Image (tube, rainbow, N blue to C red; front, side, top):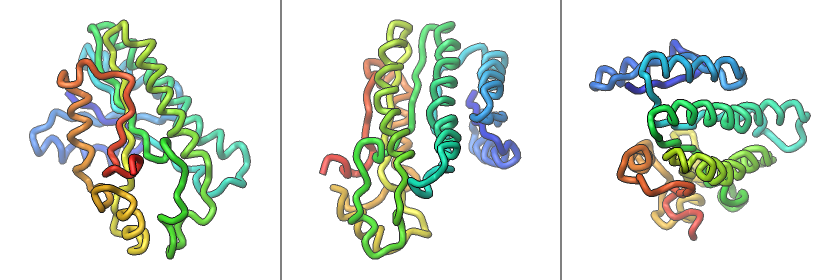
Length: 226
């Protein structure tokens, strides 16, 4: 059984229905990461329905504070509540469920922006990233070491914790200049597409990676290694 969770359950149910049509056993459940009780309810409901929790993928993110640096502290606090505090809470509660059945795998979805600073040359000739905000870099950089922390404290319970750090994804609305600039900074000469993360997530969720924990894996076409 696979569970997917978000605030907009109606839209999420459409995703679940499409996955069920392809043969998946998928259930949509409500989750508001700003609300601690919502996180608690989700984990308890999964435990009640399935009796176990084997894999957690932490992939939610809010970008409410990414507009600029000169914003009120309350805006940054709101971002940190979802992207940091909720990450800690959900990971801890999921780990408690995993301990009951002898282990599991936690996969954090970070970003190449947690591994290096912004490169202004990527945005030359565009109106993108005129006033970058530090919050996303701060949060995703923190995820790098949180992954190591969680792996350390949960390893004795046979719970593995790893993170992947995707590079830039190509979307239809991106400026041609950005696509050209960014692609030139990768070793593979392109941005990521919709299928590029599937393999590594399946690997980390499966026993094929049973001796892998505390790792941070860039999935970025060689961008951070160049």
